[in-house]
Image (tube, rainbow over all chains, first blue to last red; front, side, top):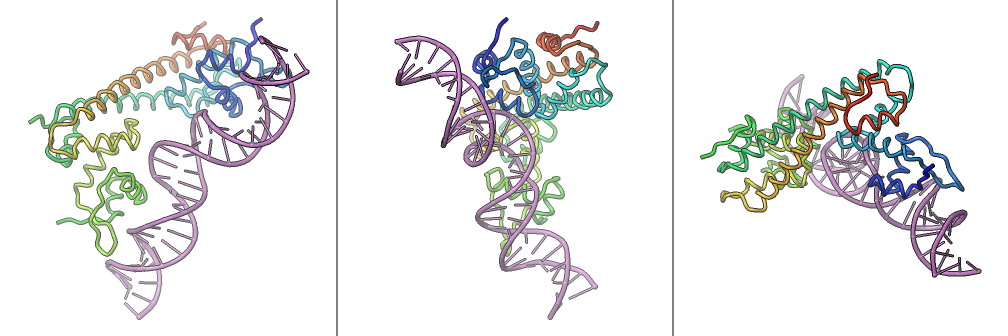
Length: 133
Length: 133
DNA sequence: TCCTAACCTCAAGTACCCTTGAGGTCCTAG
DNA sequence: CTAGGACCTCAAGGGTACTTGAGGTTAGGA
């Protein structure tokens, strides 16, 4: 059976040991077994960290990521609270996608435009198109 | 000609006066005229703030937003530097959209699944689907 | 005139997400 | 056996984007 040190895990997950300790301290990771005071991990930690990474990339705060992970803590069907949480989060994600798409449009418009003043451009931005003149 | 105080502008833009002063201090807003030491604004400030708000919503840092705004500072065609900047930003936005969509898939999968352990779910997350069993 | 709300500056605080540093222990290769 | 690297804890620091507080001035209505 494989056993990894914190440094080993960090290398595999692209994280510093300090980050892994931090995740543990804020409850994103279970307290691992220790040998001579040193943390030892088994490979399943990588999957856990991949959940964490994805959540963080998606803009979850630490607290939210913890909520997400706690959805798995129990064997029973996910709690209503957790369901509610994921629902809200899905809405937020949808909103974020919409905003990003909006911003993409705006940036693309700006790259093409030559608004004489910021005032004009501000107006252009408000309806996500620009006077190309 | 209309003249607004900082509080008035804040009310119209949905910002606190402190935020407006902060934006000014970091170079997102020009230093406005003053009367008796108090800032006075004309309505064009609203458009400027709408650019700032959109950029912030899209995840631009203050420094990046400043870059963006400086694209309008000159009347000449946008500098190569600014072009490069918007290009990179567009890539980042595309990446963010992709990630958000990924996360949406994952969350939707999780809401339906009953993985017995996190290890299983971690694996499920990695390919964005879940054992529905 | 007087009072209060709104304004001013500047420094410090806040929340998030880690990193860095100090001071110390332990493993391992030479 | 000894040096150096990886590990430990705990406290403090850092960047971002503001807010809050102290201490003080001004505007404008009753």
